[in-house]
Image (tube, rainbow over all chains, first blue to last red; front, side, top):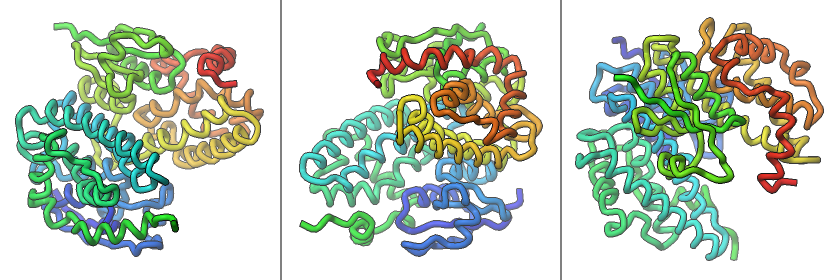
Length: 227
Length: 219
């Protein structure tokens, strides 16, 4: 299989970009990382993703692939003989992994983000409660999917690990911002332990941003209203 | 051993229609169970505890939820007949991108059209027309979104077409005037048995909208 020329348009701070980079690392694919400058969108980005104008965009042999979860699946399929499988092998397990990855994006992430955008204590409390409830669902999902193994995907990190795990940097930043633990060792012990294993995985470790650097960036992205 | 396939669905749902079409394309015998979304059944709550929504495909007792995930599951589980997604990774990624686009961009504006009124409805109509034009541009001169074969993106969008009559009457516009190629595509899809069997009569939907609004508590 020809590796071809691989480029990735993205940013060090983006959860969605990290998903693509983890997948590329898992398959040991070398690629050119084209960092976008905060506040502007490059010509290449606008040309490669005219519909959404968003990153990440994977450009493989000049053909663009957009949307992080779609990119991860593409990487798994295009380089299927390289490295471990990212999606589970059985159709039913694949459907479950896709279901929970969609839940992470459509329900869990929305709740996490609303903590950062909450105005006033009441709104923040409500957002925190929602995140806790949804994290609880993910704890149960982990127990069901992992079947006693270290990751959602079993012995190695896979699609759902990547979908949720890429949020860990921001998860910590939101905890600091809210001054409230959001990944609790006693409430969600399986997820808590999984998080550490995920961050230490060689495909992930070099990519996870430092919390202080990310927190500083978060303050730019989500400025607090003047008192 | 015969497969047991049950589909929890709701006649009006364009998401449910996707699952129906996929099952029909594969010639799978299934037990269609109409759900009352205003009085959710035990089986629905048990099989989709997270969202409590249809469609839910129950295959040999195991539930699969979320319409596009259901379609992909059907394609992978019954690979023989009528492939719905290409084997080529790039084509698959493109198909998933456009199905995702439909999910992100169509429900919002169309809801404003059938459930909203006045300025809100106008705004929904304008946005919907833009989305339709983007889809029409993507379709181009192809027979179906994926090329010569009916597939994933066609299945993702065709259910919304059964609501076109309702949208046109409520917001007073003609989709054919705006996007003739898309209407031609819809007509081609409707000629397929799987689609004809799975889509409710458009007029029936249009007539039902006031009742639906009443049940949802929308004026």
